[in-house]
Image (cartoon, rainbow, N blue to C red; front, top):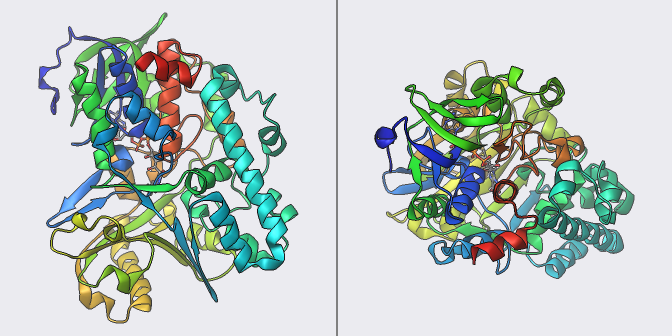
Length: 507
Ligand SMILES: Cc1cc2nc3c(=O)[nH]c(=O)nc-3n(C[C@H](O)[C@H](O)[C@H](O)COP(=O)(O)OP(=O)(O)OC[C@H]3O[C@@H](n4cnc5c(N)ncnc54)[C@H](O)[C@@H]3O)c2cc1C
């Protein structure tokens, strides 16, 4: 179903999923494949949320996502798609090096593979060899313990009880810098090791070590991957699982409210007033909107609403989608390049907060997937983090930002502007418009030590039958995080204590 016309008020589903970001789609696909009658409702004209793609003539661009982890054999996303019987529909292509780091006086290609990654940093900073190994070993332990925690123990995941998880326990309140500064002395080595911080939206001094280490190692230990044909293919695959199992995916359809009574959830009301009934609703929408706009804070315990009102959303981004007649190799040598003007990530973040980021990432997806441009062009995505309130009117500010982005590219390749075949710029207002994330937040709540895992609202809400999935709930943002949330939601609804119980039941 691509339009909601055939939905009638008499319709009753086992579960309704509000929003088809990857977190919502994961829950929807797992529930549908398990035999539940599922309706997924999406206000946009396609599924995927931030993982959607769009076409401009000969060019297909990912709106947001550049690469993901968990696609190697036995990894979380591989396991999800295999269990749903659709692994063959997504071709995840390894991205190696995982990233290229550019600093004044240093260019470093960071390979995937734990040993290779460690050796590369040790070769760049031989005097810090031991500290680098110790730091990355801690990251590795965090990753392993996090996977074990999230895969097995539903109660501990929600409550934050960490007995049996010694590394998580030790660093639960630590920022990346808290840990790194105790192990590595050279400030440049510290900076280079934390090149990936923009992926999680906070500089190392403010960023949760647990979340950062899990994210870093999902790429380093397991490999970084790009989805051939854009991440829209991944999103479409999950939506097809829902349809193939007899469920419905209603596009261009907004949920106006989620109904509740004394016993819990009763269904949803669509924008046009139709009521669709279900005893289970999974909200993939922004948590604050779910609570205040879709349901009403009066339906929740006051402490729950108060806790959420104290949380701080993550920053947004400004993204330029460019096609150029220059060859990929004239632009960069890696799928993903992080370019920093200086060696201080706190300065870079301050400049970001002032609306004048002095750093950027460049993604060249045609290096790995040339079919994204059917006329042989190179596609280039220039991304910087930026807060929504950095402009009063993004429509008016956009041309200046576009000029700044082109100036960045002119510095790399003289005369770049004469090689542009196409350029679009997405601002924080664009991010918000297409996903309804408040202020175009990239990763839900900010990923600071107090706002990850149990610091976020739990997947199971205080209202019976209401679940959250996506980057506004546990464990946190990014595709790996929201897939995890969708799995936790499906497990809770289906009554599976562990991830392996779920996979077994799907066989
Ligand atoms: C520029 C950028 C780059 C990124 N790069 C990466 C990356 O390389 N790797 C990575 O892992 N992560 C990346 N992320 C983060 C990642 O994209 C997000 O954390 C993740 O996609 C969020 O998924 P979600 O399930 O929370 O849903 P979202 O993507 O937030 O989607 C929510 C969906 O719900 C729908 N919706 C909302 N309200 C309603 C309603 N009332 N009725 C109907 N539908 C509704 C919206 O239309 C939307 O489709 C990036 C994010 C951005 C913005």
